[in-house]
Length: 441
DNA sequence: CTTTGCTCAAAATCCTCACT
DNA sequence: AGTGAGGATTTTGAGCAAAG
Image (cartoon, rainbow, N blue to C red; front, side):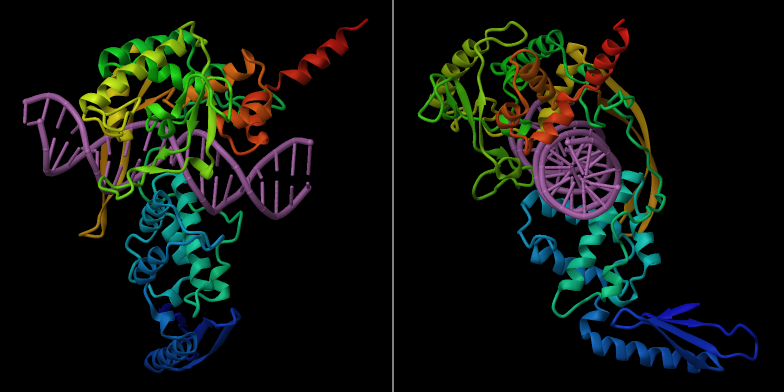
């Protein structure tokens, strides 16, 4: 079987039989007809039908996926909501769809079938990445179908329905080791954060000490603030002196931080408006500043002394933005630099668990359009920086008795249900109540 | 030669939605 | 109300090259 511009040419079943032409019409219905007795005539007829299809669907049906990819990115909107992508979302989509389209950029839109899609979905090394490819392609199909005039037919747009079966990854890859305990109690949500998933007071103190040695004046404060006040990394590392309200303000009487911005992970270096974007979900919030840390450290006093240092740094010009946690040259940190040069070393020094693993994967060579297998040694932090935020949640609940609504507001989670699943539903409640019932004489 | 700014790539997390 | 799927967004990890 061969395909010409979306029309499949089938060889005759018997030597004396007729060639058969099959294709999907613009209405999404399957169509077929005879192709005559010889291959040449069948091909010519297929080409005619394909040309007719292309005319009917407009010249855009013959556009290649590579061309459509560029247009999709240029339009820059979610085909689901119509909202403009954030800069970081666009980068992700370019990566994800680009990976799926590797080696398939020359395919014409009208030739996209489920088989072609499955090959593109499988351009990944792990099941997780196959799912991400699928997500990217599904949105791309929808965009192409909704586009006026359409690049994809209704039938094509429906080729990747929800719950679609996932193909196996087609290239070599290695799944990263898992961090979390996967066993869970009856009634416990899958994403429940266990006590051992969050750093202990001793671990936070150790990381504080290591960071103070490695990163200087703000090193000791950084993990304490993360574990007690709950900002995300991107929110914390853009904080400026004026965001701290030691004695409250008109909005709130108690000591707190204003979290109005976050480091934009997609921002280029010379971004005209700086490297800030609104926090996740475009939600600003106020985070608490307790006097004493759960580790026993005098947290508020630490912040006070850091603020004094910041003012001096600003005055001398080494920290013009009055950042609480500046990079060596006074700007906002790049997360990767912080991770690789500061945090990793501090974790090693503080004895935080790190898991070393061997990754074998196929690397795409765009010039030769082929993969080559490479191996490398990688390190996974069993408790990454983000785990300090889990400690914040546990402290809020276990120490301060915060209810889900309170925790949601202070930590900036989107809804109570998420918080409930992750931090409240321990799975112990029902078991204990049941045991008590059975113990009664 | 070391440090650090930055990009590329991948995975985790968060959160909505549809289904039971 | 509970649950799983999956889209959206952030975090994490590695590598490279320009700057110091």
